[in-house]
Length: 371
Ligand SMILES: [Zn+2]
Image (cartoon, rainbow, N blue to C red):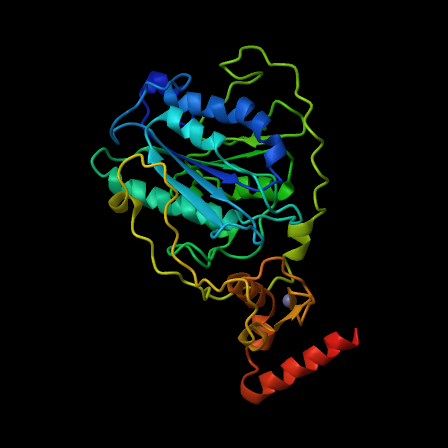
């Protein structure tokens, strides 16, 4: 039987683990309301067996549960790249979480940290597996909602999946039989590619091209493992007149694809925060609290001299500036500088140590002053 063809959850009594992975940046904000209405609520209704009501608290983990992962960009203000809600069995509560997302930051970024979001989602599914031991295999769905192509950098925040690129993460999702779906206000080739890479093993996938079930020609909605109504939200009946959605910004033409070849492959990542404990063990059921992220070093807003030598960054007009490629970082945090250095320059510059490194640093500083 083809997953997703079982009919609505209400018919089959499907027990599902549902994770929404949402880009929490200003890039998605303007479109979220439209996506929520046309695709996200119908998806929740599909799993819930009807519109979410305040009264339908499952009360235990025997039924379908929902989790939310929100990821930001490198330049985001919050402490962590990813916020994560422990699972709830109440579809109603889940919707309130969606409505509480503050879309901010990332305005100047063309890419987003999809890898961080997906690695967190995979960890959640790992935790669910432990929780679900008694009832066996559940129907698992991961829905990515975003409006930016992924960075090419691998995930770093996850303990289990750090070092994994976005592509390898979606492949893992597919291999594990988790149904991966995408909802985007734009038809981004990089996202479509992710959807294709997440195809489950051949046995499970119907031999037909994925159909875009979007209700707006600009949107891209590719789903597996759930059924969305065609032609309107099931709650609101016939399709409402189209909202005047601002035209999506032009896709950064081939930004991700063309950049791929010159991107150095990174070795295992170097930043490993201490492992977070399993959510299942750590949190009371349905606590809608952001899961505490592993504490990173707090540096405060002061530029540290040692970063010059460690990451080849200097402070120019109180902005951290990369001496090698001249990129200016908008956030003065060691993590961001380190991430930049490790991803762009460590292959070429790690080899220089001791006096050689000092010499190169002073050369680079001189060349910056000459400009
Ligand atoms: Zn640089």
